[in-house]
Length: 222
Ligand code: PGA
Image 1: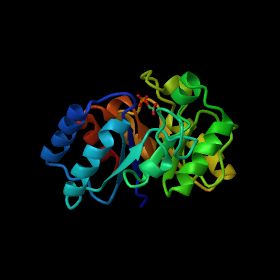
Image 2 (image 1 turned 30 degrees about the vertical axis):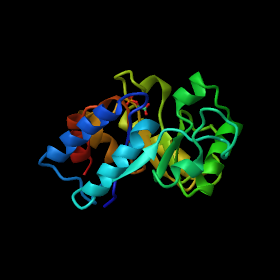
Image 3 (image 1 turned 45 degrees about the vertical axis):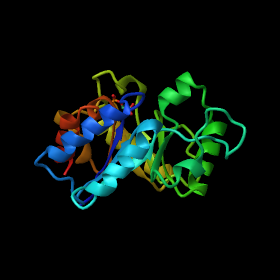
Image 4 (image 1 turned 45 degrees about the horizontal axis):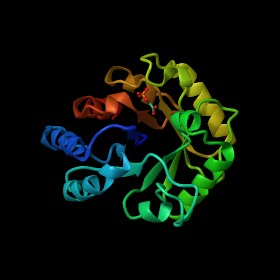
């Protein structure tokens, strides 16, 4: 049986206080996240420290890991506003790289994304590399790819599980990697995606913001 990798992408949402409230709901739920799923929360930078502290307290009850949503292509230095791999390495295990919103709003090119993957790997972080089409470049060393069709992100119109499976299969022909599906994943369609042969997990935006919905997704993925 596969262990689905369930990744929350909070995007630019949640103050520290809101992140703590989310965690309290998870903590107070009857449901315990166990090793049958690997759960990762990719939170805004400002929330990471408090989540890390809380997760380490919860770790005996839960199996939750932490991720960032981006990483600098540079190392420490005169790069105002940047967060580097060295800063992240003791905070998180995973980092999302190449999300379509970064490509669209921040003009991240293949060269920038390649540099970001190199930095992540150098500092021992696991890149979750996003792409929307099979033809897109996948940098060397990436072991987790997230397939997110543009029309499915935040739209309420997910890809069909059959097509997502087909695409995941094509990605696996190019690269030895786990493939996640992302785009309008909800509690109700979780099972249909995770039961597909080539889909190893999910990347969840909107539905991860409410702790209750996110827990439902985890339950349905097991
Ligand atoms: P969504 O976002 O679940 O809100 O569609 C997914 C993503 O952009 O990672």
